[in-house]
Image 1 (cartoon, rainbow, N blue to C red):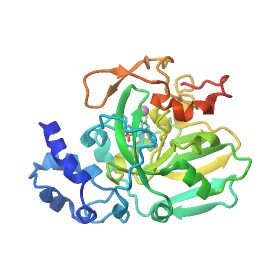
Image 2 (cartoon, rainbow, N blue to C red):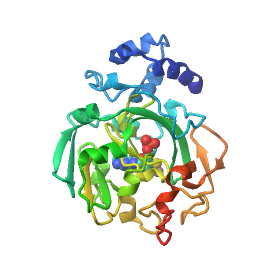
Image 3 (cartoon, helix red, strand yellow):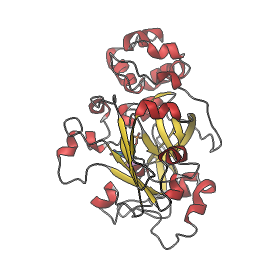
Image 4 (cartoon, protein in one colour):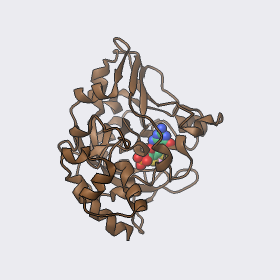
Length: 324
Ligand SMILES: Nc1nc2c(c(=O)[nH]1)N[C@H]1C(S)=C(S)[C@@H](COP(=O)(O)O)O[C@H]1N2
Ligand SMILES: [Mo]
């Protein structure tokens, strides 16, 4: 029943005019003519916009940007309701139902600090950054190391555009990205046994590969908080944990960073973490995956199906632990 409803609101929303996005929540639901029960409406809403009840997202008019299908047009696209209600965001809890808790995150103002090996360190507000970046939409597969997967339309810009904007120094070898630290809202950060803030990194050639993406939108709207608003990484050839959410810090360095999961358990989560069905995780096989909303498992692909774009990155790194 919910599934049927979701296909009902998904399409009109996708085609919503920019004006449509300015309607407040109740009017938006009414405008879609669905008369949803309160519970169903609130289920649908966290992904509507990064905006809360009172504020309108100042970047809503950018969405949806033009689709770029150079990296494929995978199907079937996961129902939006699933992608915005089944999440990993450990700052807000250790289960998959963190979307409600994540709504407490304040995403305006949002400042991103750029530093380390750059021409000149600087800070920039998210809205200012977004206005400078070439926005597009890409439909990507996403593969979590826990073996669930999804196919979703991200909006945002190529990571290489962001790297160029940061003006890294010649000697920089890695880019390190960190999530906001705010234990009052991100309550799991009060647990001192975890290496907060959530930290991830890419080698410079990975970060400037065409496939690496920075997402600021999802399903043609500003990205919801549970999915990493206002700005997150998307590296679809790697396990999902590399795709760090709600970024506030970007640093360039010549030393390989230790990422969040690697610091916790380096025999289970490596730095490279490229998807490979033949390399099992110590606790479970990676041979197959379960698409969200499907009952059947499907085979997992090397580099999550993106080998043609990224396999050359690893030709001279064969001695590294590339796949976990
Ligand atoms: N800050 C932060 N980023 C994170 C995570 C997290 O717990 N905290 N989880 C990662 C994992 S394991 C996955 S699979 C994806 C999930 O993204 P989604 O919830 O948008 O599907 O986010 C990644 N980014
Ligand atoms: Mo994951």
